[in-house]
Length: 389
Image 1 (tube, rainbow, N blue to C red):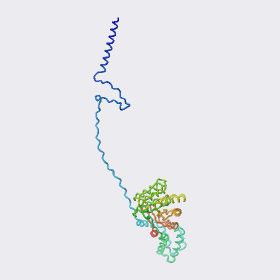
Image 2 (image 1 turned 120 degrees about the vertical axis):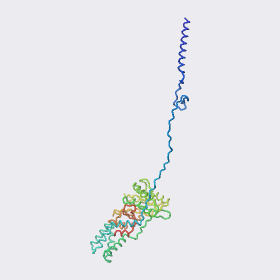
Image 3 (image 1 turned 60 degrees about the vertical axis):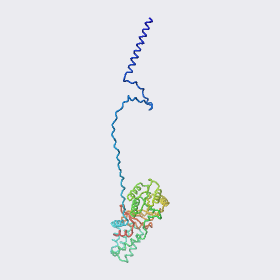
Image 4 (image 1 turned 90 degrees about the horizontal axis):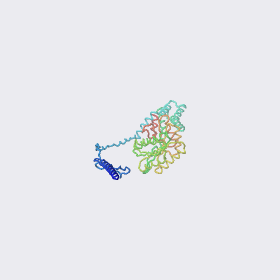
């Protein structure tokens, strides 16, 4: 019985050994490498690199050679050709021709004075014509009285009447007033021109046209866009300056006008320019606000250089309203000269006389059109001759 037990145990051991040998042979068959443990992807240093014999190299992808980048020459845009403004002398001729084309005042006066009999009705008609031309009551009465006296003594023939009328009109416009523009400073300081006036009179346009006059006279200039309450005014001024190569000093919209004016004049002093022209705000809500603003602008400017000219821009077609504006501005700043825009020479030509009488300062510049060079120095004799044709 015991021997039988030993036999069974021996057979069982042999069976176990046989199975173990079979499994080992299956695992170690040629061509099958033992499995590698999985790589730890949580760290680069723990990644296991496969053996060279087991690495399959992917075929190289052919690359297309990249041609060298060609150097492209970018041409700088050509600087715009600067305009050459017209000289003042030729402007006077052209303005005179334009003024003579609408001389209703002159034709009307000559027609009345050429009548065979100058009765009271005729003199009343002459007065009405002069008053309608905005000459003003006092200058009209003065002119009529002088014409009556001279024509009574010298005769009333047409040629004589024309000569007498010309002399009296020139005297009325006052040929002896100093109409020179003070655009030069003393020593190394630039001339400083302060341009004032209500919005709508052509103030900013006048500043741009004045810059053209300065360039035509071979002067260097700098413009100050101190009308900071109108962005359009600043852009308009910049456009005027670009056309003739004159720079514009500007500030933030709604900024302090005095600060812009100060910076412009300081820049003008540092650069040694001949003239700085300052465009100012034209708001006329109340006289006190206007006085404070313009007074501050002028005081601040004069910390750098004296103001050599204060030009008041008036629209000749506004008549008595223009005279009211002139009076307000003359109380605010020391106006030294008048610029009359839109002076067509017909019904409103007499504003020249009225505004000079009102302010006691001369008309220095006149404009008759919208062209860039339609601004010229005022000449009394040329003005009267144009009125009389």
